[in-house]
Length: 81
Image (cartoon, rainbow, N blue to C red; front, side, top):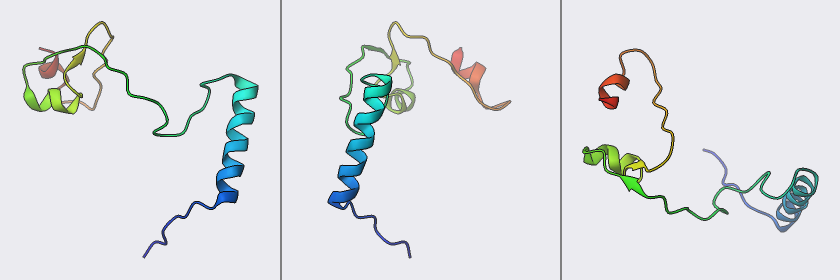
């Protein structure tokens, strides 16, 4: 069985130091920790398929470019119609 990961204060301090160094070198927002960013509220357009809207977080984002990709015969064209 896998051992649980524990966050020691030393590791947390070292990680914060590295994050600050990266931001100093490459600018603010160059790196971030998962969960630190706030969620943006984006206006959406309903697709007409409830399950697709749920998977997309409410529908297709309004005013954004959307790319549909995947293997052959996976339903990309059908989804786009």
